[in-house]
Length: 526
Image (cartoon, rainbow, N blue to C red; front, top):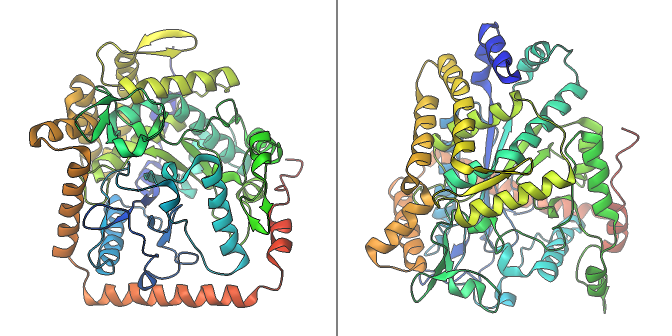
């Protein structure tokens, strides 16, 4: 039986539009932590010389004031994307004095939960709303969990390629078709993202201080570190971005309307434990709402449908009215062996993998399947490198490596087509390296981290500090040229002016603004 994937690839290969595969669009958002030379989390505010965290397009903060988030623009070339990410790092380091950017996804020397400084965005209504949202995260999940960092990979299909893809699928190009195609990609990604956790997971260990007072099943690696022998990405497991409140929440990805309706339910459904926290207590905000999700971004998924939003817009409203523009992959750890946490080899495979998800058959999802996917992810997180580990597929146990090998074999023609278009062999080379990691788990980043710690006889803290120092040395030794410094300084100054303009333009009280902003997102009849 000929698969949809084979038909699609053959048709793409024969089409006049195949060269447009070379125009895949991508961007990267990288989180990390600012730490002092002794490894403690910085208590200093976001450096003013970096610009406004509220309005700067490339440099903002995530949950924590000491958690910079570095954002590239949209790039058609892999090298262009990585070059910009590297330049942003260079400018940040130019303004950090003696601080370092922590090289690992899992934090270490954080101190007590209340010592983690929540990000501040100025005095405007939208800026204060961002901080209140983070106060809500703090009250709901604790601040330590929110300091876990990662890389988000944004991916989209060239506008000019969609008509050909639609023709291959036997239909007309339209916004409805594109939305359906992106949701088809998302469903397949959720089914198979455990493969990325295995291949690129880079958090098999953590500091004992991170789980102080928490129940866990980790083992001692040494006097300061905990781990699991076959773990890949503890960041994606029970001690990472997980939520008991969301454990039984099923967000449907069968279509944009179903996604919007299920997300809207979570945004409007009261949740008793959060009702007990309250919203405004003794005149002080504790969270934005008492619903299961304060806003859309609180849902912890491995991938999101996205569209760029303008000032004060709600993501769900924009998606419902204008459709999906790109997808955001959210299950990637920082690779502590790489100065910017990711490299071109990984990006080449991500592109191959995402195209496989787009072009393959994608049955509807269900609540039962969602529970199965969560269990599969947890198994790979905790024991992905263990020999003979199995996963559940449609209710049946299958060897993980058999399933992974099948996915790799299906992806190979995509890597070959991408290389044929580019006239080089980089996608095939990346594909071969990932296949080798299936045969030899010791080649994975998670295994390499543990091997490095054993060889050097150092705990996780010292390993991550050593890598952080190496990365800083790399960027300091390869600084920005004078012209780029001027460009970044101008961008920082402009962002500060934009923040002041927003603050000056506010005419509503914060309570009035929140009443408007938190009105249930409009999804229309769809």
